[in-house]
Amino acid sequence: MSGTSGVNLGTAYGRIILDASGARSGADEAEQSLRQKIEGMGTQIRNLGANLTVLTAPIAAFGVAGVRAATSFDDAMRELQARTGLTTGDMDRMRQAALDMGATTAYSATDAANGLLQLTTSGLSADEALKVLPRVMDLAAASGEDLGNTADWVTDIMAAYNLPVDKAGEVTEALNAAAGSSSATVGDLALGFQNVGGTAARFGLSVEDTSAILAVFSERGIKGAEAGTQLNSMLTNLARNTPEVTAMWDALGVSLYDVEGNARPLNDVIDDLNLAMDGMSDQERNNAIQTLAGNFGQLGLSALLAEGGFDTMATSMDNAASAADVAQARMGGWSGALETLKGSVETLQITALTPFLNNVMTPLV
Image 1: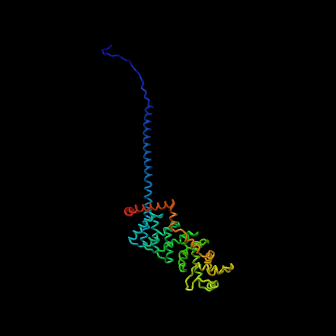
Image 2: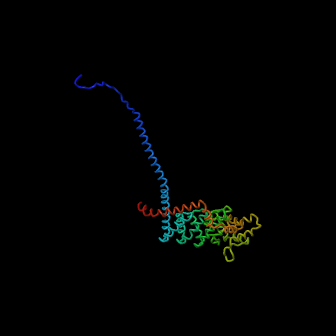
Image 3: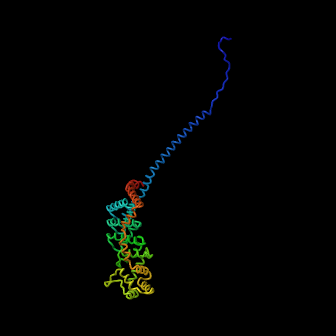
C-alpha cells in the first residue's frame, strides 16, 4: 500500500437513453396549437371584414346611386336653363318644385325636371309649366305613359287648338276618358291628334269631340296615327267644293254647313246622312260615302255612320273616372308605394350629394 490512502472502487459502465419521440410530440402539439390560434385569428379577421362589408355595402351603393341621380338631375336642370334662359329665381322655383314632386309622387325628381323641360320648351312660361305639370303627371300615372312624352302630347294638342293654360285639365281629362272608354291608349290618341288636331279645330270639333271620334275609330280597328289621318282626310273631303261632292250633298238633302256658313255639329250631320241613306242599296250607299269622304276618308265616315256618330262614346267618356282618381288607384298598391319610396330616396340623394358634386368633385376634376 502506498502512502496515498484511498479506495479503488473499480470501473463502472452505464447507458443513458434519451426518448426523442416525446420531445417531438411536445413540439408538434405546440405547433398545432399555434397554428390553430393563427387560423382562429384569420377567421375572426375575415368575419370582421365580411361584417364590415355588409354594413358598408349599402352605404357605398347609396352613394353610387346618389351620384348618378344627382348628376342626372343636375344635367336636366342645366339643360332646362340653357334652352329656356330662365332667371335664377325661376330656376330655383323649378328646382324646388321638381324635388318636391320627386318626394311626394310616383315620379322621380329627374322625371319631374324632364317634364318641366318639355313644357317650357313648348312655349309655356315657368308659372304656366308649374301649373300644368300636376295635370300631366296625373295623366301619365293613370295611363302608364312616359311623363316627358305625355307633357309633349298635351302641349301639342293645346297649341293645335290654341288653348290657354287653364284648359290643360280639359285636355288631359279628354285623353284619359277616351282611353278609359275604348281600346285606344293615350299614346294612340296623341298620335291621332298629331295628324288631325288643326283640321278638327277648324271644323269646330272640340278636344273632347275629337277624342271621342278617335275612340270610336279605335273600336273599329283604326288606331294611332292612322286614325288621325282617316279623320283628317274625311273632314277635308267632306268640305271639298267640287261638282261631285256638291251634287252628292244636294242629292242627299244634307249640308255640312248652316245657313251662315258655319260647320254644323258633326253628330247632327252623321244623323242626317244615315237618315238620307236609309233604304239605299249597298252600291248607292258605298258610292255616296266614297264620293263624300274620298278614297281614304271613307273608312272613317263608314265607322261613324255605323256607330250613329260619337255621342254614345262621349256619354261614356263623361262617366269615366278622372285621371287623378285613376292615378291614385294605380299607385295605391305595393308597386305604387315602392315607386313613391324610390322617388323620395332619390330626392334625398340629390339634396345630399349635389353640393358635394358641385363644390368638391367638379373643381377636383
